Length: 145
Image (cartoon, rainbow, N blue to C red; front, side, top):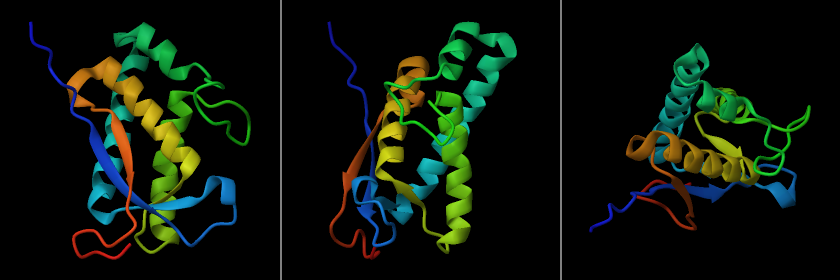
């Protein structure tokens, strides 16, 4: 018997010089990985929307359940997969404008994205690989960041 090895998607980032919370630093996603990050959020919302239209009531219930032990709390309490994914997508769009094209997220948001990627991989299989964050200390492919 052979086992299929799960492909893990690595997303590169570097810590930003912007931000005031040393325990939750802001990080810049590598320019070449920003499109993948954006497309994953959109894809996840598409699947969540389909689950919410009664195609899979069990998955929908899991997606909207608040998860105070797995996801970081928001301004108004515990997050669910639905609130986290939609919040990350809004954050992405707002921060591209605010930081002149840079995709900037916090370390907590990176942890939440990783956890959701594992959840979505378990629900969707190989079409949604789990994510691993890789910190870069130097230029990547000639791009300083």
